[in-house]
Amino acid sequence: MRAEYREEPCRNALNRVRGMPFAWSLNPYMGCAHRCTFCYVRAFEARADRPWDERYGASIRVKTNVAEVLRRELARASWQREVVAVGAATDPYQPAEGRYRLTRACLEALAEAHNPFGIITRGPMIVRDLDVLVEAARRADVSVTFSIPTLDEDVWRKTEPGTPPPRQRFRALRELVDAGIDAGVALAPILPGISDRPEQLRSVIEAARDAGARHLWAGVLHLRPGTREHFLDELARTWPEQLERYEELYARRAYLPAAETKPVGELVARLRAEAGPPRSRPRPLQPAPEPEQLSLVFS
Image (tube, rainbow, N blue to C red; front, side, top):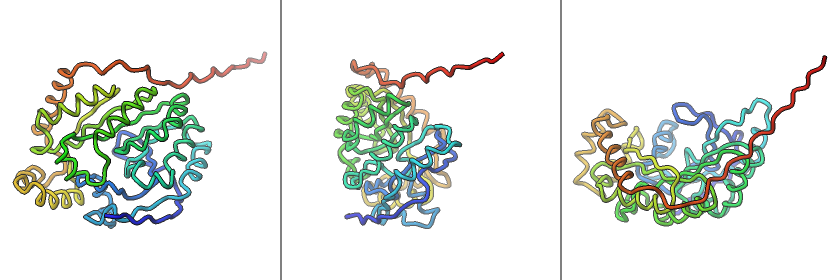
């Protein structure tokens, strides 16, 4: 599917977020050409009455002035330099970034403001911006997480049709770690009965270890309305033998109970222990301490 790009200015760059482990997000684009079948953003699109089905990713909004707006927002006296999640609702390194370079411009603004941020992406294009990331990490806390749910080529092709190959992401991860960036892996979403076999999980964990990942977390698939319907439609086409099980697992709920997810978490923990520590790697870059404020006492 060839994406259409709509160049439109935005009024706000930073978005207040609730119910997530971060308070602010930044998305230079709206929509994502990666078109992952399980993408949780489809649920938000459905709620906003925007295309969430097979049409999602066909039209990408390009926020042409997002970096300028971001600079104004970061300069406000009320801004407290809170952590900003870059790419919470779109991949900041999807193909459009190669042309528009909006993510790079936003990272430059965050670096200039000494503002901490974290990036989540499936795009190895991020290595293009290694110079900006290194400079930003010397000024504030910076982290990068590569979403790599599987190395199984069949699963990848069927569930992440517009994404770069997972091994390219691991090569990018290694390059970032070697430059001192705090970079790691999100082994998520894990698909019950499809990508949760021990050998499948082990391959990702060992590749993360070999690349020197500084963190790794795992999560089982959740399906909110919008994402659920699209994922099950795709499942009926790609793994029809799994459809009935998924309809039962996710009947009347988006998140699986602990009885289903806890064994997966325990398996991942065991596999991580068996894989051993990551390879030797440089110390991560850290921002210089803030200069002490001198207090003047007049008597």
